[in-house]
Amino acid sequence: MIYYLPLERLDKRYTNSMHDLLMRGFNKWFDGNVTVVGGQDLGGEIRVGSFLDSDGTNYWKFAQLQEICKLFRNNEIKDNDIFFVSDLWFPGLESIKYMAMFHNITVKIVGFFHAGSWTETDFVRELEPWAANLERGWFDMIDEVYLGSEFIKSEIVEKTRARYFRRLIVTGLPFDYDYVKSFSNPVKEDLVIFTGRLVDEKQPWVFDNLKVRGTKIKTMEQNLKKEDYYRLLGKAKVIFSSALQENFGYGPIEGITLGCMPVMPNRLAYKEQYPEGYRYQTAKQAEEMINNFLRNYKDVSFLTERHKNNVDNIMKEISKFV
Image 1 (cartoon, rainbow, N blue to C red):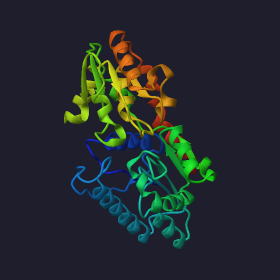
Image 2 (image 1 turned 90 degrees about the vertical axis):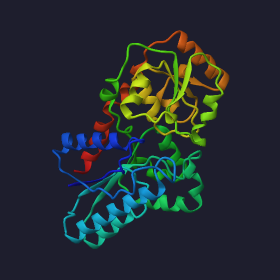
Image 3 (image 1 turned 45 degrees about the horizontal axis):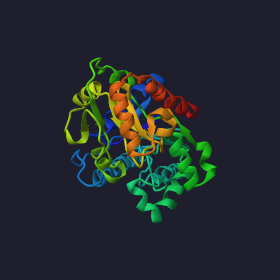
Image 4 (image 1 turned 180 degrees about the horizontal axis):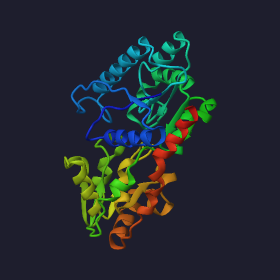
């Protein structure tokens, strides 16, 4: 049995899509032989924190752990069962291995790491004085980690221990290429889009200061429903990032799938995802690239076709333990 621990479902994040895609993968690969261990919601909005609500995500995860305790108590967890965790940065995760030991069974723990204290420019970097050893303990007990890019893999190896290298598998993160592509629009406008969160690590002020022709739009200021967000990307010619931290980059991947030409900084996961001609070193160079792409637009959505198979990549890895 696979016990699947999803992230809380938030409209303004990618957790809804991730959950739906993973469930589709479980049903395809394992005939639905999966039990979803849900948590408890604390409001469904981000009040304290950035990527997730700090209070809400802990409340959700601790509720998941309580459900798992009940499953162990009722002897429903069996030898060689698998726990798939959508976010392995999960306080208390070690209790699963602890209970398995006392029940005299072996269980596997696999899932995603999205970021951690090893990430130099992530806002959680300041947790390193106490979190680094905690993370190493998790790596010691986790059987496989699925990652969005080679970039995050290299950071983990450099900042933790090289011995984890074989446990770190670059699969890409779940992405619904065909659904996003369905919002494509052949009619393009001189729109330049910034999809990043309005936080320091995404540097929205760099976008604000760009001197380019056309109209600049920051989607996080628009309060758009997901479908309207995709329709906006479908009309745009260019998508821009100035991120200091990016391990996968859903926003640019969505934009490019919908026909936006990327203008990405020459760093982070972008270096392995996009050719040199779509990466800039300076803001001046970014301005020149944007103006050129607005004048000489072409569809380069083929750059994101590689993500069509990300869910199958993940399921193939899990199947090794079934």
